[in-house]
Image (cartoon, rainbow, N blue to C red):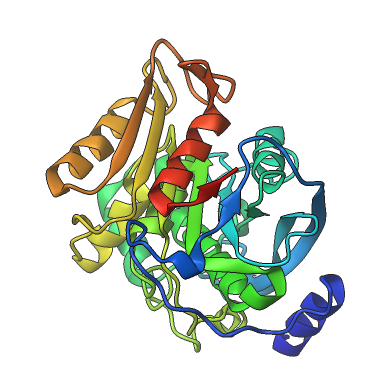
Length: 336
């Protein structure tokens, strides 16, 4: 299976080979050698390659039943034409309550991808396993959720968080492992999304490399070998749109780790104050955590807005424009 994955990747995307990982630094540290140029207005034609396989995962008929099947995990790459190296990375994670959603059927994520790729970013818009896939979950995770959550729908979604974020972090590792082939700067990684995608982005961005990975071993899930498990990465900015901190705190409850400190990645928080699906207090909670630790954040309460206000305007700027400014600031990008 692993050989098939590598061969497929090479054939599907310009004969890619695996790349070695780079060193990482805090986003506020100045490194002139890594200065990256992006553009305020769209400048580049965007080249799209769909359904690249970044790994495999197990799918069950119910959680952790016997005889699972291996399923491929896909992402789409959006690259600016004729930009050969040093592109910052944006990983986009769709919403859908961990029950639905898709990287291409949710037009906001396609627009998000094209906006940033046309300005110089390498954007990777990915799918991950959903509730219907019943991805592998550690037995202790299942027991933790069953103890804490009685509502069957919320219980199932809480279990679906584990394979979803396992996949998302696998996608980042795959991108970093192929850094030379994509011409990207692994010192400038942003993860972002809305709703469940915001929850997952925060969970993937604020946790450690071994979280959502080492809780299962190869004997329990042989597909882990297809996900570059030894590859390290550091997230430098998080885009947290109308989500909750539950995906991060789930792993903290599971492992007993302390998540929050002044070195957490900078976070962009935007949330409708009239959101009836994911309560606005989730945004206030993350803001308060960052205030207490001293980590950098930007906070945009979207007055009177409900869930998923993608078309919001703040101070004559679109949501994408605000995210652009945030990433440029937190990663010290060179804007033209």
